[in-house]
Image (cartoon, helix red, strand yellow):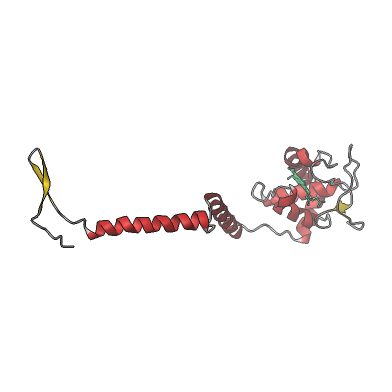
Amino acid sequence: MAIKRPDQILDHEYDGIQEMDYPIPGWFNAIFYGSIVFGIAYALFYHAWGGPNLTQEFEADRKEHLALVKRANPPRVWTPKEVADAEKSPAVLATGKSLFNSKCASCHMADGGGQVGPNLTDAFWINGDGTTPFLVKTIQEGVADKGMPAWEDKFKAEEILALAVQVRAFKGTTPANPKAPEGTPIADTP
Ligand code: HEC
């Protein structure tokens, strides 16, 4: 942009240095006033009109990221035969037992009798019907608003199946301090 150069010299002088009266360039004023307008709009949007705060933006990004991870790595769906084989396998049960003792016993007790979490040995279920595929689903997804964590990011699919087989094996056992039944009685859980 052409700058107008008036001859006019301002009337002050310091140590022999004089100053000419150049106008402030238009691009500078545009940035200056533009940033004021932007600042007002920014403050109104985030502080008055309910724009997302950092935590909300982070949560939204995290959700998007988890959805992508899930799409790339969908939860394993076991066939009835795979489930039946796992239920009969002592090796699977042993894996399930040791994982249960280290990760689940704090809330459900090592014998499944329940404490923070419900009793897993009785025929009462809050979620699903107590069969292995339902147990897999509950363990994978958790029950977020009831304090049961989701485990799908922490265990491999085989480990979740092993945990479900272990929970299944609790049925009908007698824990030391059984928690009172919660949920719906499912009498015919096979
Ligand atoms: C921080 C405590 C906590 C931990 C750790 C925990 N759970 Fe839970 N669990 C709960 C709570 C609370 C519930 C009840 C959820 C509800 O009310 O729907 C629950 C419910 C369940 C249920 C469904 C019971 C029903 O009646 O529907 C299963 C199965 C289960 N947990 C298995 C596990 C396994 C397997 C692990 C370890 C990998 C585990 N839980 C670890 C707290 C926990």
